Amino acid sequence: MGSVLRMGPSARAEGQVAEGGVPAPVRDLVLCVDGSAPERVAAYVERELPPGGIPAYRAARGGGVRSFVLWADEHRRERLATLVTVSAGNGVSTYQVLGAHGEPIGTFVREKALRGRGLRTRWTVTPAGGPEAVGFKGRIFWWYVWWLFLPIQTLIIVLSLLGGSGDAARGPRRIVWRAGRRAALEFTSKDDSVRLHAPGYDWRLGVALMALLRTFDSWLLGTEWDDRKE
Image (cartoon, rainbow, N blue to C red; front, side, top):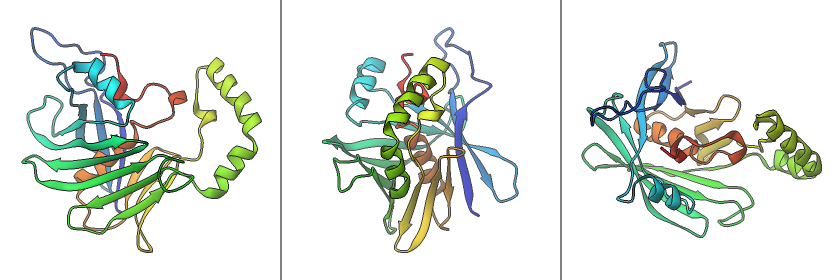
């Protein structure tokens, strides 16, 4: 089955604030399940802020810019990897994942729907030294169904907002990345998880992909983890 990755908040860091100049623990983490082994923390994830701080980061992310760190522990004692933006503009963004010593792990390219090379958002994952894998957000059939029932979806969106939940307003989100004919990775919308099907993938690349995908959730689902105001 390979590894299964999912993201969530750290229960230990919830509600903790910085005191006496000591930073609060990292608030977000990615969990991993390998086969029948118990679920474990793969990495703690934290946005890496530019010189302008949080306001500058939030302003830049609107154009597709992202930057975050994977830590081995919640107190930031060991850096595992870093995701940086290589370029962003016109709906196409390229990100690079670097190891603790700056070595390349892989790249991600996100081409927004209708702005890149198709009607669906296209994601390309390229491991360092490996073949690229391409995936598209949602299946064509379900997008046809989505647009066909758009008037009803509009009503559902309004009711979801009034009810305090955006779950019913989600569009098709499943992504299967294929290298040739083989499925290498998969994002499943049912449980918001990334599955690594192909052997040999650096697990840090999968963790970074999981965290990156969660920065592009629909605004109806609530604030993305990297878009907090504090």
